[in-house]
Amino acid sequence: MRRFVSFLFILAFAACKDEQPVRESCFDKIQNQNEAGVDCGGICPFKCQPVMKATVNGTTWEADTTTASYNTGSQIFNLRGIRKSSFYPSVQLVYTGPLAVGEYALDPSSGYVSDISSFVVLNSGTIRLTSVNPLQKIVEGTFSFTCTDSSTGTVYTVTNGEFRLVSY
Image (cartoon, rainbow, N blue to C red; front, side, top):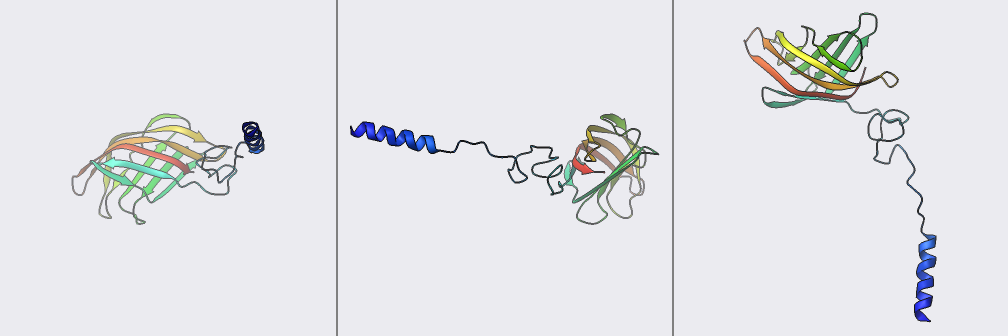
C-alpha cells in the first residue's frame, strides 16, 4: 500500500509540473522573433551594437565606433570604423554600386589610417556584402585590402575583416 501511495504522489506532482515553452521576448538571450541580434533590433527596443574588426599587419584591430551610410541616388556605400574613440587608427570602406549581397571592388578612397599624418593610397581590395536588410537598415559582410601610407611608405595588409549589425 505504501508503494501505491508513493506512486500516486509522484504521479500527481508530475501532472502539476508546468511544461509550457518559454515565451519569446527581448530578454530571453535568444535571437528569435525578428531580432537583428540577440535581444536587440527588430521589435526589441534595444539597438544592436555593431561589430567591425580585422587583422592589420598581423595585429587585431577592432572599432569602438562604427558608422555607415548609403546614398541611393549616387549609390555610394561608406563604412567607417574608429578605434579608441578618436579618429585614428581607423578603417574606411567605400564602394559604389547597388546595396546588394555580393563581392565588390573597393573605391580608391578606402583604406587604413594610422594617424593624423597618414595619407593612404589603396592598392587593391574587396568588400563582400553577405546580408543586407533594407527594412531594418542593417548590413553585414567581410573585407580585405592593402594600402600604402604615402608619407611613410608603410604598407598595410588588412585581412579577416568583418562587420556585423551595422546600421546605415
